[in-house]
Length: 277
Image 1: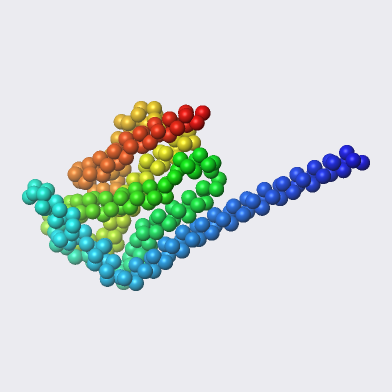
Image 2: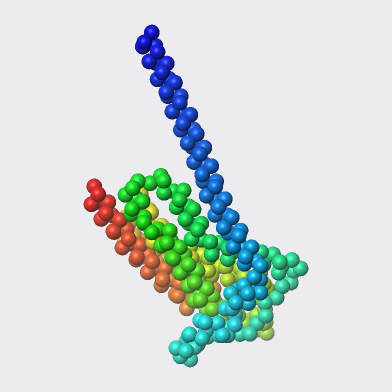
């Protein structure tokens, strides 16, 4: 009887463990859901604020790069006549009844995501952090601030550098007697393409850091694939920028510098891993 009783107790204990694991998994999903909800709420709240300040948003942010007094044009013109560039005077047109309203909503959420990105990443990190070891948490200290800064630098780079050069090239490119009069949707889509992907591409060092921590990427591999990486960066630059060699090189150079920085980061990660072992 005692042995039978022990077996029964073990079975009950095992079943209880399974229930605990199942509940823990459901709690895990519930926690993830609330992190995502809070991140979406932050985007929605900021989007509403941006939506309410319609005139300021479009005049001082969205349409600013097409004006001759934009900061980038003034800085480059101050450096000399050779570097001076300004886009031609053009009007942005809306051909569909709903185009202005739909674009207004799109821009609001677009800016809402950019402004709330630090909080979004904080929510992601808050969900991932409890599953890491103390050493991993210590190694990733300040990752929210670093990712947020890199993303915002990338967005600003796309806004102040890529956008002015792209607009100048595309609006000055003429075929026969055609005149560039872009639609509102086309203008906003191009502005989005020059800024948001650039901000995400600037997260390359952080991505390499994570991949090195889990052993997928090594510094030896990154050095061996330098030439391939340079070609890939050129292709990506050609996709997110207009067919202008100057603009492509302006995004290729910083991205390749980020690749070299990633190699240095991976080397440091490998040294720390060897030291711990």
